[in-house]
Image (cartoon, rainbow, N blue to C red):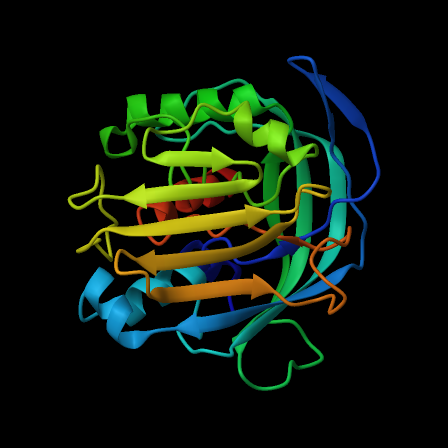
Length: 283
């Protein structure tokens, strides 16, 4: 798989947070850390065809796979990643066609990736050294989202899983403080380390490849102790779970340092635009 393909796949990677440098932000001390060679596996737990069709229409499978990657629309499919490099004092320039912003402090994590499959993983990864960036200072991420909205009206607003993509792939710890220091859009609710997106039709924005047709709720869960992304869940307004993913390695439980699941930045495919321009900027 060519590296450019992950612009479509989006944000389904695994990174790692462990011990490391400490940064003080707005009175809160954040830990930005990493370890090389950590592996983890992510699994699609639920795919409810009928409910997904009600939410996204007849082409729901395209919506899911354009967002999460080829094979992610199949229940039981798994993805594996292995961290190859961590730089916890990375200086990152988030400027793009729509954003002009000074370089910021960040964590850079590179990972090898075995994309979604129901077959055993091969010895060789499908993609190598794919990068993710985590802003060290929450206020810089809020500024980025606001500037993005000012430069690209489709993204107008504060922090959302759409606007912040791909910068919410993992959190610094304490994760709860990191989330609460961000200025979120009005249709987002933060409870501890759970991010909830309440979708009311018509929503304030639509994805390019998949629109919301009914009210629903999306949630992203993080580990309080380690900032690990624990899972994503999409629920129809009738209470039926339409789609769910979860970190399944290590088997001892989610609250284990060293396994960080990159945030899936929402079902709305408008998030892909952010990734595309980040990739173009790096090239």
